Image (cartoon, rainbow, N blue to C red):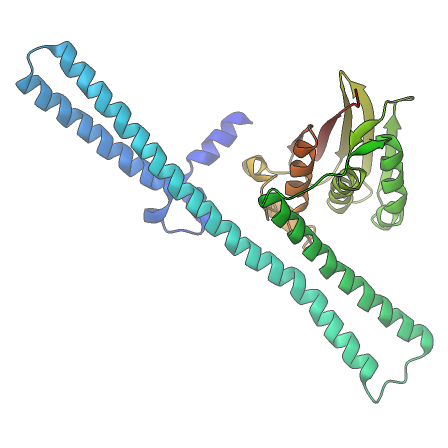
Length: 316
């Protein structure tokens, strides 16, 4: 799997396509060009050195120093281009995702309001109630997207405040499962929660940790394959509580796994199963867990499912 990941990174054409840049502007291609220039410069320096300097050791040392300096400069320039390319990609994805996620509920709101305000509206009260539910659902979708964007903004500005207190993580997880039970049943997904008895409390922000659990469970349900099952575990490991959620869903392709916790990222195979989603949930979850003193990670195999986990320090 690691070999495949390395090979995918060496695929310059794929990397350029990901950034949406022509080949000559792609950071990886520029690095190759600079590498060729560096090699040429080193050979030239060595040839000149051997001609004017008699001691071969001094020539070798000068050539080595020139090579190191040039490679450092090349790496710095390439990383700068890569950061710019990544920022440009995320800006493009943000516009695309935000417009897509807002366009659908706004269209639904407009259509429903026009129908309810129409002079020809002779709908029965029950039918009108159904349309009001549509208004509520679509307004909630927009509210969730805006809330995620505001959370990301606070994270980026270092203003995400945590109101820490003692609480039971097990009880919080049970609460989230109960709240999402109808959604899971509608998706033909069964949730199994395995928890050790008498676990200690943690000292963290319950509202933020709940958001993490909701994001992970929501993803597991949404991307589960038909009649899939979800297994959640909570146990004590050393000085931490260890949370794990395992699904039998679509999984994450090996070439996409390094981007999973980035903003606005959604793997290509996921788009075939679930078009909704901002690509912000895992980025927010990672930021909250790390700010709470824990760690988060995952393992996944395309077509077989994913296992996400995080740790939270136990209150000492």
